[in-house]
Image (cartoon, rainbow, N blue to C red; front, side, top):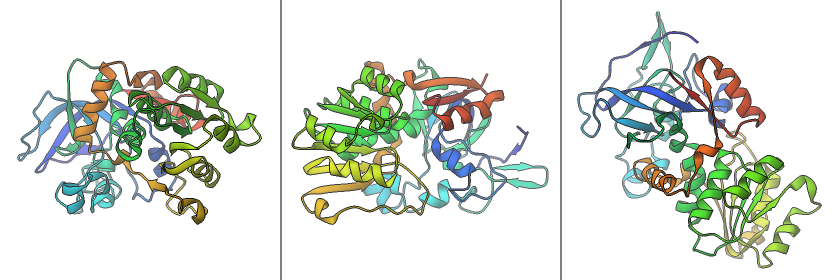
Length: 350
């Protein structure tokens, strides 16, 4: 851990004192070089905290507001204004390049630039510079230090179900991979009345938790000779919807092979920017779809409040996935995420 100097706020930026930040697989992928990012850099993109200062053009946030930070987007391109900001035309430079669009950085260490703006926040720090677009105001009576994962991992899983797959009540759902994203999908499936909900993972403890969170059936691939046959035995005509939160070629094929006709598979698992998969076109031609999804196709300004209301109603108990760590144990938190020992580690400040 090192001290850095923050730049002055410009335009629509806000300064946020971080209360807690989730550890996400994308942070780890960036640290390992799977996502190109100039170094040195500060990562962290599931932050939540309190607004401490606002830039000169900020109108919708004020000092003292509680906010959840999500990904950045321009808010002006055709995709942002007519579809979803998750596919903003400037998504890459706003979230991955480590600097503002004008090339300036938000942090320095002595005479050295420190690259920030990671997902518009870089919240592995006690203070983060975000902006009015990606800082979502939330009620002050909630456990602020736990809310950060709503801005990415939980939004991705729940949004993939509610915004992309869009099952009708009574539609079947299968979820491959029961990390935070997959378990968020299970909870969302339960919230929108999917039946059955089939949870698939090799970790028995996560399968049990999935059952408690709404899964009606659990399958451990290590304990079956033919996973596709097992699923089809449960749902003879195939499942209406499936979610891949693993990203391997085998899992994506299985998630497609269990679909009904028509059926829809959403894939959110990530194995690097260059990752070949093989699928059978004949299978897709029977009305089946495979959709790649970023951030659950969600506009965080609209979707984070939806998740909070589901949480208040007892339908999205995401806090059951979280274990907190102090900042001094951030390496332990990352190790717990990598090993799978903790579903969603959150580094809590103060």
